Length: 487
Image 1 (cartoon, rainbow, N blue to C red):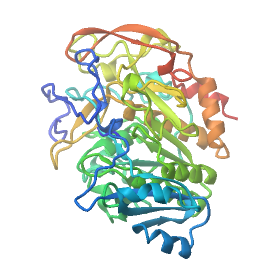
Image 2 (cartoon, rainbow, N blue to C red; image 1 turned 90 degrees about the vertical axis):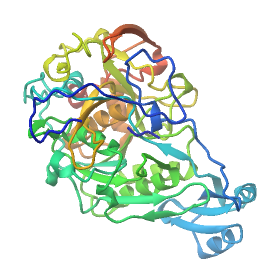
Image 3 (cartoon, rainbow, N blue to C red; image 1 turned 180 degrees about the vertical axis):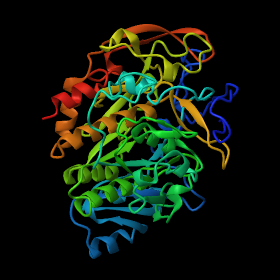
């Protein structure tokens, strides 16, 4: 899974000293160039399936049935452990049972699959404190995907804004000060949720009222800002889909990680919304999180949500050559690799390049690179597209009660760029299916093959990064081309 200051109250031009935030959790990338960004942390930990036992030997087990859930089945499963939660829409349950019971449960005639609850993480990567709040309303990353014309400008290349589209951010929730970053009308508080529990000896998924807006981690807040933009101390910063409506769904704990059972419940919840009160609205899910194995119940929840008409985007992972994370690597999910811009941090120490340097048009693939932390596609995995994920600015709080902003890097940052563009496409044509959206994105992507680039990191040091075609998907995200190709 992944997780990933300066006070804006007094002055927008206060210069803040450089700070680098490193978060490591199970998978670090020792080959990163000095100063390069890496959402190595919780985004794609190698923790994966967990069989850690408590003193009584219990673990959390996710069970997918091959038939409808019935009272008789629940009673029978109760003989092997304690049934903690039932996902009726996907015919699944979560259980607390002794680890030794897992093979027996897997062999039951009504069980399609059963596995230990799998860890999921979401966190930054590296973060660099934003030290220059001057500039315009558009940023390099939106310019790079052809949503906006240029930095210092409010002009957009595309006429669509995501209006009428709901984007569910399954993540850590929002910070308490979210109203200082986002317009209140852009957050669907009536649908916001928080789910917790899961994992190891627990096996239970619970609902936690109002906790969605009391996040300690900031990851979900930063991810949200890429979609709808944010207020930078009073200065509005553009988003990829600034008129989309965000549904915050907290599925990761206060430390930025969680369990696949909880994420499955969040996905099912959004599927239910699409099947019910949001039946007449396009709905997108963004999951900037993942882990190294695909949980059967999580997969069933994804299939259910897509069947209701939801389009799902997810980060590819921050494990480099160790391969992609799930659910991003699952074929029906639109996965995002992390690309960067070779003019980042030039000329050092120019901290305002993100708002005052113009990405050349037409987009030249030679101006971009794939970050070394970005997960490469292995056999059986599906990497779809690359989007800006190296040094993206957004709200990220380290101190309670003080608004602050950071450059973050990771595939967590790439995925919401894709989700925002999907919202634009669905505004233009709400009837598109998930498969049609993915096909258009891939066909309209800017071809981007294997390559090597010398880049400058935030420390000012130069380093060389290289990548193969297993790191690029179909190429670089191009919002303008995707919309032109949308019928």
